[in-house]
Image (cartoon, rainbow, N blue to C red; front, side, top):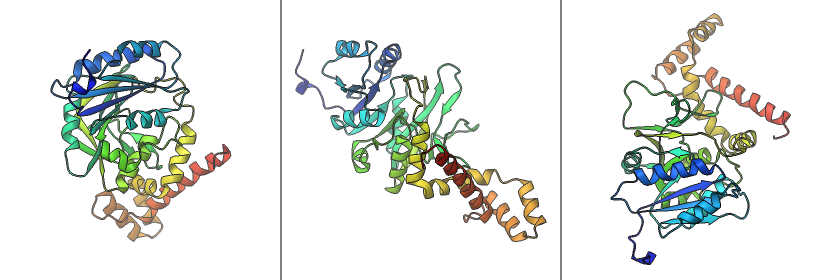
Length: 314
């Protein structure tokens, strides 16, 4: 075997956390090797987070100069596993990948192109659920109740790139320098929320989250054991950290919910100015949101916070 120093420096570091699900990891690995562009130098870093199903033995069997394996002594969670692997990466680009993806030919090239666009900090892609083949992710928007929600509808004409407040960390591409600027994933999140938190931090640095719509893959979606156990804790932490920004980002979704009934109600209460404002905001003629929309988002946040207090989180 040749010395690793003789290999060309990698152009992209592929970072893949694993936790059990050996069969899915093996299928992912085959799809990855079959779809990487032949003109791209790469390194693959698997970081195992305490698997007990034979995953570690299999990883040891495939390790070589370009496939590196890290073993966590205990289960550290998604954020910490990624942080540890990225710290050892050597390439200027990072591709964060879940081990339950099924990658398809041409998935990486559109993401590389999107990352070259001005002010783009991170690039996601379009993902379909393996079992149903239904669209599962084409970006993350903030819904009318200020909750991060996957975009699961594509318009008839879809541009090559669209921009959203966030993208999922299941399959994303970014520059290593961008990762270092933000400081990686916040390890206080436990298998959820760290990707949205990261994207909101990017926005605070003036960088955008893009989706490369020509990059389409399959995803088994939340297949790791106990993936959803901390969802409420993660949502509470994210909202506490980004409450004002989430409220602001919720306004477009709230705008789309403005109905003729609300306009009629504003007129019924002798508030024609609010009715005019609601109409103009709904049509995109003014940027300042109407008071009723702001109140609706705030009410939704207060209701959610009251529910978290009832759970002992707040």
